[in-house]
Amino acid sequence: MRVGVLNTWLSGRYLPFWEAYLGQLNIEVIHPQGQAEQPPSPVSLVVQQAQSLKNQGVDFLLLPDIQLGLESHKGSPSPWMIDLEASLSRVVAGLPPAIKVPAELSLELAGLAASIGQTLSRNPMTARRALERTKTLLHSQYKAPRQAGSSWVGLVAQPILLDNPAMLSPLRQALESHHLNLFLVDKSPPELRLEGHKLGLGLELPTDLEAAGMHRYFSRLGKIKGILYLHDEEYAPLPNPLRKLVQRHGSNKPWAWLGAGDNPQEAVDVLAKALEL
Image (tube, rainbow, N blue to C red):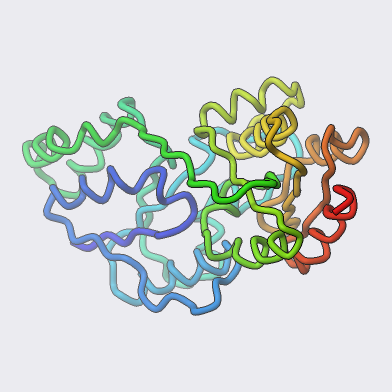
């Protein structure tokens, strides 16, 4: 049996356990092939990877639920942020059946893992042994990103937009032209969601709360000189309550908007002017 896995869409949060677990089940784990030289948008990349896995003849796709089973009862969030399988099925014909797993690890997933293992291996004993060998990986071990330089500018965005470092390269270059450096949030997802709750914006989805948490955290972090808000209107928008908060009241630090398809140099120039650089 062959199970395809993604290398994007928050894969670093959940894949370390599932890849090891599937391996212990003697299931072949297949990665996407033929990555684009120029990193496409997050949605283009995930579609490209799903198509690659389909072409390689996998039996199942392991897909993340980035909202951890929660639904939004307010607003109109992007379907890509809510149901990746359904969104992919609309653009990739003949998509292999999906195995959905939460895009976050915890010991509470042991039961789900055991059930999936039994279904795939058709052997409860094999699934039990595989889980015993890999269960320690269910402990979520967050590693903060390494931050280079100083004169930092924080970036607020949906977390899937921060998941591909190569996509951030043009933004880093634009900031460096003003002797500024990009600072990515260095708090764990659960900590960010707590930060987001404290804003009292009525947000429900985990990723929306994380974006709001970035705003609150950067606003009170002394070493952050300014803030950029990256908004992908079509696929990964910042939540409306957060956008309204910033538009009406601004931030306690210089800030600027950056659209997903915009030239980052223009947004950075606006921010640099506000910083009086």
